[in-house]
Image (cartoon, rainbow over all chains, first blue to last red; front, side, top):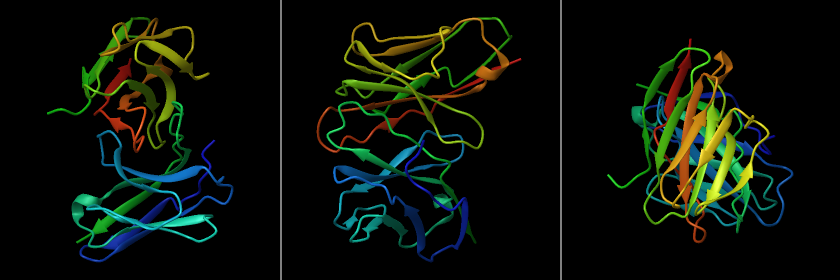
Amino acid sequence: DAKTTQPPSMDCAEGRAANLPCNHSTISGNEYVYWYRQIHSQGPQYIIHGLKNNETNEMASLIITEDRKSSTLILPHATLRDTAVYYCIVRVVPDYGQNFVFGPGTRLSVLP
Amino acid sequence: DTGVSQNPRHKITKRGQNVTFRCDPISEHNRLYWYRQTLGQGPEFLTYFQNEAQLEKSRLLSDRFSAERPKGSFSTLEIQRTEQGDSAMYLCASSLTEGRYEQYFGPGTRLTVT
C-alpha cells in the first residue's frame, strides 16, 4: 500500500500557484519524498524529490515540513499543460531496486 | 529521442490469445521495471531487472506473465492466455543504480482484451 495520502482532486486558476499537499506521517529517516505527474495517456514524469531540505528545480518547488510528516509541491505559475494526476511517493535511497508504490494521486485541473 | 520507448502503443486481442510487449530503456540504465495501470489507479509494480537478472516479481505477476531481458538491454513482457482482466496500460521504466534513482517511464502499451 502507498505510504502517502493526497486529496483526490484540486483546481487551480491558470497563472496562479498550485500547491499540492501530501501526508506521509509514517515516513522513516532514510525515505525520500518523490513527486511524479502523469498527463493523460502518457507515462509518469519525474518532477522533483527531497529528503528534508526544501528543493527547487525548473519545474517545481518541494517544501517538506520540519518533522517530515508532510510536504507540498508548488507549481509557481500553473499553465493548462500542468493539468495532470500528481503522485507523491516515499522511497528509500539507496533503493537497491525498490519499486515506486503509487497511490491514486491528486488530479489537478488548471482552469483558464 | 533518447527516452524509454515501448511497442506497440496499443494492442487489441481476443481472450485466450498471447501477447508480447517490448520496452527499450534509456541506453545507460541498468535497471528496468514493468508496471501495470488500470483506469483511475496509479501504476502497480509487476517486476524489475538489474541488467539481465530478474530480481523481484510482484504477486500480481501470475504464471501467465513472463518477462525477460536477455542481454540486459531491451525487455519483453509476455502474457499468455489473456483474460479480460488483463486489460490495462503496461508501463516500462528504467533507472540507474546510483545518483537520484528516479525512474524514467515510457509512454506505455495499452492492452484491450475483448
